[in-house]
Image (cartoon, rainbow, N blue to C red):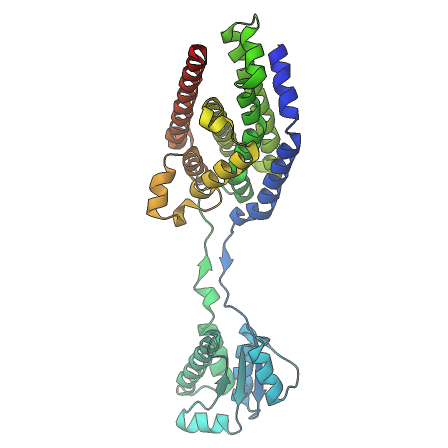
Length: 383
């Protein structure tokens, strides 16, 4: 029991680093968790920009064209000179200057010629998009006018035909609805890795070197019991961190989604990942080449690299094939795959392989750590 208490006394010395990483994890979840928020069915909309329209014709058709542009974009209501307009375009306060010359309607109705002039910065393609929108409007109006309808009726029918919201919508993705909970559980691995490395790694490494190691070895406590109490301290510390993170993550989600199948599977996934990280830390702490490394530096290198190539910070769908092949050998990858399957409506039968692969990785690390510890102890006895 004394070794168990000593574990937490040593871990307490790292409380500043633990609190820093816990705060960073909370900040990441709050800031980025909304990316996975629910997307209900919603209408598609065209991008809107600020433009300037000068209607010198002031006829029915020019006013209908102006109204159409105003339904999409923000028309500046200021009265500006040519120089002021060009300055505004240069400083990107306006993206286009639409000038409808006098006689536009008469010319358009008699010859079909479009005399509207669009001035914009050639380096901003959006100006060309606005020209295409005007051409589509005027071409459609001309087609309706040829059917014998009035300008007002032609403009009304054109507005209806060009309204993409009737034909295009952004569909809600299938699967579990709680996107906030998914986002929060997606980013948990960073906190687990960083906090456990900062809190556990220096403690376990400290027991294996220097005066602490010598005192433990000459004590009357059997080796098996010593390992048990260190293991118990590691498990307790890991569970405390996991419970704290899961509690915060659960608060971030919708309360009516708590304790459902997806939540329980997510918690189980996080528990398995935490166990794997603890076993991986045990390996690093028992390998002399890693045991002397500063915990903060080690946490940044391992934590960030695993999170970036394992699907925590960067979605697996946009990672390159080469990186994906590498990331399959780290637990973050299979944790992220499990999260995707869970929140796409999958059950335990769909994610058990992800759990098994994570545990296999952890057991390999544990056995390597035990072997390294034994070899190191034998070498010191022979020295």
